[in-house]
Amino acid sequence: MDDLRQKYLDAVAGATDESALEDIRVQAMGKQGEVALKMRELGKMTPDERQTAGPALNKLKDEITSAIAAKKSALADAALDERLRHEWLDVTLPGRPRPQGTIHPVSQVTDEVGAIFADMGFAVAEGPQIESDWFNFDALNIPPEHPTRTEMDTFYMHRDPGDDRPPHVLRTHTSPVQIRAMAKHGAPLRVIAPGRVYRADYDQTHTPMFHQIEGLALDRDLSMANLKWVLEEFFSAFFGTGVRTRLRASHFPFTEPSAEVDIQCSWEGGMVKVGEGDDWLEVLGSGMVHPKVLSAAGVDPDQWQGFAFGMGIDRLAMLKYGIPDLRAFFDSDLRWLRHYGFPALDVPTLHGGVNR
Ligand code: PHE
Image 1 (cartoon, protein in one colour):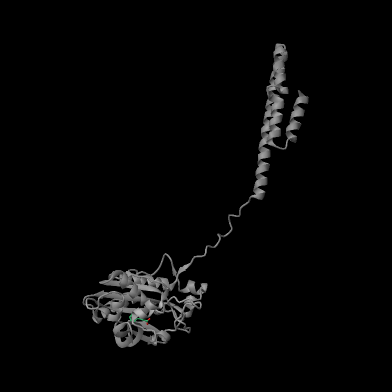
Image 2 (cartoon, rainbow, N blue to C red; image 1 turned 180 degrees about the vertical axis):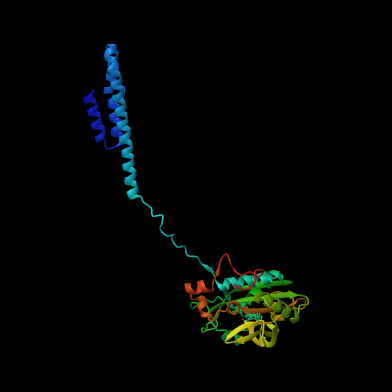
C-alpha cells in the first residue's frame, strides 16, 4: 500500500495539466483502477484483516483524491497567473481623447436668421450654386451688356470649343433664387434663400466664396414700409436689442425703387456696437421687385408687388460675434473653429439670450 501511495503521489506531483491528472485518477480509482481492485480484495479477507486494510485503503483513496484536487487548483492558479502576465490591462491609463467639433459661425447665424424669418412667415427656398446666366442675370433685368456683369467679377464655367450650351456661372448672389421661387410657387409668397455665392475678389472683407441670404415677399399691396418694418424686426431680434435702420436711395437692376439699408451703430476704440450711437453701417441691398423681374418669373406685375433684399451672412456673423477677419472663416484652422465655433449642444438661441 505504501508503494501504491508513493507511485500515485509522485504521478500527481509530476502531472503538468488537468487531463494528466484525470488519467491518474482513472488509473488509481476508476472501476478497473488499482485502488478499486484492492478494495474488491477486501471481500476475500478475514474480518480481522479487513478491519485494518479497509480504513487504510479508504485513507489511501482520500489521500490520492485530495492530492489530485490540490494539484488541480495549483495548476489553475498557475494558468491564471500566466494569463494575468499576458492579458493585463492598465485601468489607470487616461481615456483616449475624442475630438469634438463645433458649429461654424456661418451655420449658426444661418440658423438664427432662418428662425427669425420663420416667425414672420417666411419659408426657406433654395437654388443651385452653378446657375445659368439667365437666372443669375437676364431674368433679374441684367442684360448681357450691363456693367453689373463685370462689376460682380463673375466666375464663368468652362466651355469646350463647339459646346454651345448657354453660359453657366457660379451664382454671384442669391437673387436668382427669387426667380426660381416665384416661378415655382407664384404669388403671394414669402421666402428667404440662404446660400453660397461666388465673386473673384479677395481681401480682408472679401473672399471668392461667401454667404448671402435673400428675402422676397409678394402680395397685392406690399410697400417699402413693410420692408422697413420687417428689417427692423429682424435686426432687433438678431442683435437682441432695438436696432434702427436707415434707407438710402440706391440702384439695382432688379428693384425699383432700390435702397441700401444701414443699421444704427457706435464706434468705440475700433469696436463696432450695433443698436446704439449715431453712426450707420451699411448691411444690405433692397427694393421693390422690378415689374420686369416679376414678368420674367411668370408673376403678373399688374396683380402683385413686393419687396426683396439681400445681405451677407458672414458679415452678420462678424458683427454679432465680434469676428475681425472674413478670410479666416474659410481657412479651416482648427484653433479658429474652436474659438469662434459653437458647442453643438449649447448654441445661442433666440429665447436663450444673445450673450455667450
Ligand atoms: N443681389 C444684391 C447683391 O448681391 C442684393 C439685393 C438683393 C438687392 C435683393 C436688392 C434686392 O448685392
